[in-house]
Length: 250
Image (cartoon, rainbow, N blue to C red; front, side):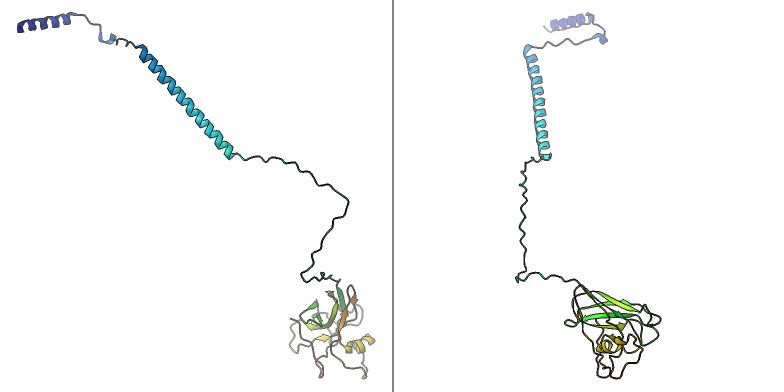
């Protein structure tokens, strides 16, 4: 039995070697036959993939639209406003008074003080002329004047003017404002100026011995909107015994 098998094997091998084969470069695989079930399954998978892509695109588009609607500012809706009717009747205005019930004080127009400048020398030093309130020493008005090289009685006479003075009663006097070593004595508008110096129109003329030597401040009353004139700064003797000089305002 083994011998027969060997002969059969040799016969088959020899016969197979004798079968002519095409060249190796011309070998082609036999086309695989597809069953209808495989074709249907592939078409179904392709359709499912397309549907999935479209669904994802729709979801992404919806999400983008929602984001744009949230980010975009809302345009305010115009509301028609009916204007109030205009009438010619006057509008009532209610004035608010202070808590004390007292009406607000009316500011009176200011006044002014003016006068000549004199000094017992051949010049008039630079001065600061003050108008100090009699009722409140901390309230005062002032003006600075320059140095005049020569005191003269010919026009124009050196003078001063204090403007913007609140109506009231004041003492008027002047201090030197240069570097002067000595007693800080002011010039004052006094009874001596009003009764003894001004009538002569020349402070260098001899003053009668009967003239009262009153060098105290003579109060000056300022009226709203008016100028008080001839308040001359010519009495430099307020430091004599029996008189008191005012102090320089601070």
